[in-house]
Structure formats: structure tokens, C-alpha cells
Image (cartoon, rainbow, N blue to C red; front, side, top):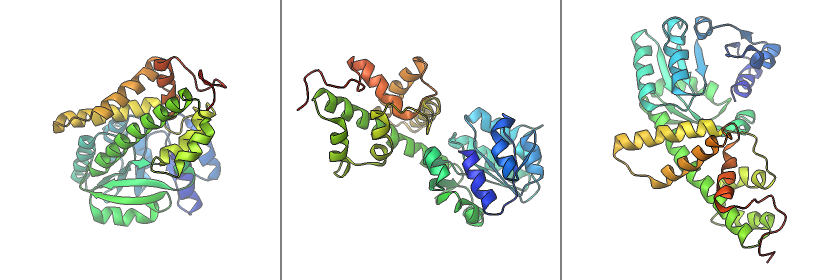
Length: 292
């Protein structure tokens, strides 16, 4: 995702300095004119705005707050850090305070839309922080997708976590619907086409329905990262005294994929967990009771 987003900024005429933990992953951007450096601090020292998008909250903490190599150790006064990782709201608040202490600003701006949204510059961006800073960043955000200002520091993260709650239950519904239709002997392509224009139609169905039927489990978003996101959601629920049983069920199903070594597949691989529970496979050509 980061590579696609950087490419949009370069194509718009911005000068980019980039850091990746695996230098080879930046080669495409280097060929477009980006400069690669060996630490987040080095990126910050040459930048007015620093975007980060990494895997886990521990990565965010290291990349931004590490006293020796982190972004805030190199960012000049007035600089802005924009973290687009799905992370912990409390960490976003902590980063905002740390940035303010050195005369800088921080925005938490996680995104939804996956690899396809990044490539097509159609991401949904959920921004938390000072509204005036978000407004100043709009020319950059508009090159990546649509920005939604959600409120104070951490509110962008809360919005993204709420987004993941909806996606989790939607994916369970999509996969269970396919399992049910298969067992009933329906043609699954016809089934998806029939329900897509009714009340069951959804972005998840549009993006993943045919990919599931084609056994295309390439990640737009990794199971491992979704397990991380849902775990953060559940911890926040505990802090709020909130019960979301659908979320808890989805997380358990995704954890089962991880236990089977399928953490690097895309989230649509959830169907594999439901196939195992029911001792069937949608890959079979005919259902046990034949076509209706």
C-alpha cells in the first residue's frame, strides 16, 4: 500500500525521501526519483511531512518514538507526522503529545480500502488530531483518497477500528452465505449475482465474492494484520465495558486461520475456516445434494 501511495505523491510532483526495512521494496520508488535513507530519523530530517504505515503498534512506537532513530528525533519544528497504520488510539494520543512537546504536530490517519484502494487513490482516510493541521494536509490526502476528519487525537484510530468491526461481521456473513448456498445446491455464481443487487449487497461481496469462488486468497489485507486489528478492538471493548459477540466470534475464526499457518493469506480466506467446520469445500464442482 505504501508504495502505491508514495507513487501518487511523486507523480503529483512532490519530492520524497523514503525508508523501508527491506530496501529492495523501495526500488520502484527509487526508480521514480525517491531518495532512500536508512532510518526514519533520516526521513524526518529531510521532510516537512512524514507518513508512516507499518504493521503493528510496536512498529509504530519504534518508527516514531525511538529516541535514536525515530521520526520525532529528526523532525524539525513545525513538521507533521501522519501515522496511517491501524494502531491503538492511546498510542495515537501519546504520539500527538510527544510531537507537541517538540513543536511538531501529529495526525492519526488510518485508511480503509486495501491494496486496490491504494493503487486507485480511492482510500477512505480517517483523520484524528487538530483540524487545522488536517486541512493543511488535504492537498496530500486528496491524492490518496477521501479524508474524513473524525475529531481529537485517537479518533481516527477509533473510526478505523469501528470500520474493522463492520468488515469482520460482513465477511462472516458473506462466507456463511456461500456455505449455505453451496449446501442448498445453488449455483454460487448465480447466487452472488442474485443477491448483489438486493439488501445483501455490500462492498465485501463486490470485492471478495468472486475471489472466494476462484480460490483467490492473495492478500489485499493480511489475516495476520486483521487478527491484530480485531484484538485491539476487543481490548478497547473491554476498556469501554462493551460486549460485541459478533466481533469476538470473527476474531476466533480468524485466529483459527492463523493457527493453520494461513496468516499471510487475505481476509477472504475466512471461508477456509468455515469449510473446515462443515467438512466441505466450495471448490467441489457439485454439492452433496445436487443442483436445484
